[in-house]
Image (cartoon, rainbow, N blue to C red; front, side, top):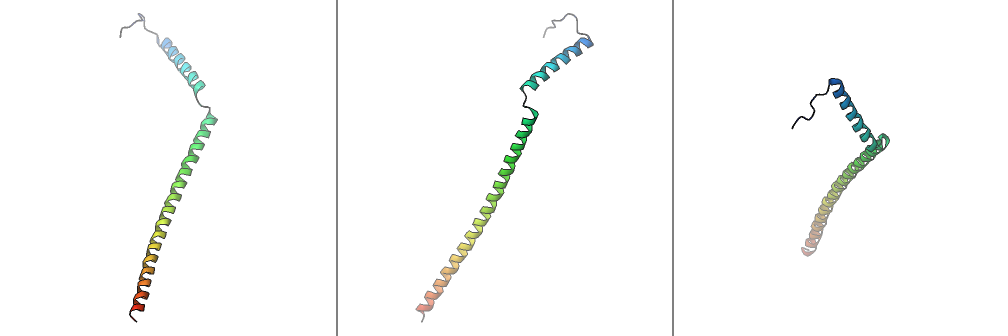
Length: 95
């Protein structure tokens, strides 16, 4: 890129330019940024949502384990009932 300025900036001029640019950027950022209290509220809300999701996942896991446990108990009960009925039926027929 071609140098347009014939005389370079002095250190003071360069620092003044950098400070002016930074001040302009900071003021624009501050004008468009979310206020600090609202930002904190957003973080609190997100934390609440994540905790709620974690509790829901834990509850769903407990329900799944419980349902599987009851399924096993039901199957074993069904097998026991079937065996009992078979035993009673065979006992009646063998008399």
